[in-house]
Length: 203
Image (tube, rainbow, N blue to C red):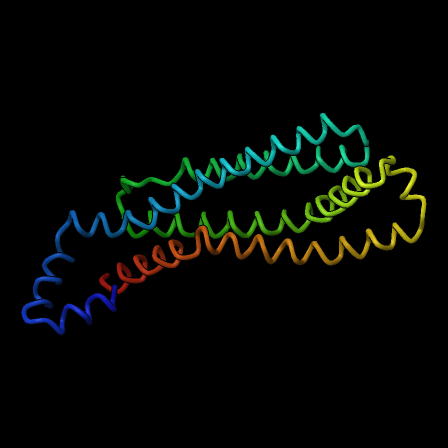
């Protein structure tokens, strides 16, 4: 917003026109609503992808009768259901019309709720990633060898390899999840914080 002001102030009468626009109630409301609308839209997309992935886990359980893999898939399904529920609660609570009596407090409430949701999601992900990595490793080994995990996991060397794979994939998965969250939501969270800072400065 500040960059936009600088550019407009360089033009003849541009500064006055911009100030008039910024003081216009409709324009200000749209300017405030934009990052919230984007966050809400991307949350809906996030929930949709989680639902599709959950169906994929269910199909793995159905088609691959290895209890070790199925146990991991059940845990992943539980995690995804929890993620979808918490995401939907956040989605539902985003009030684009800002019907509260204090717009600044409403924006702060949405901002802090989103930051808390992101923090909880990343922490929960760290607990579930080892099961995702182990489940994927066991599924790949079972399909590739044509033998059940009990057979080839009896080899201590395979267990060591699986442990190494899990130790590598867990932090990698965390970093990828963090990057994807930033791509999907980071810009709009930053914009929302900017709107909050602007309103606080005006107050």
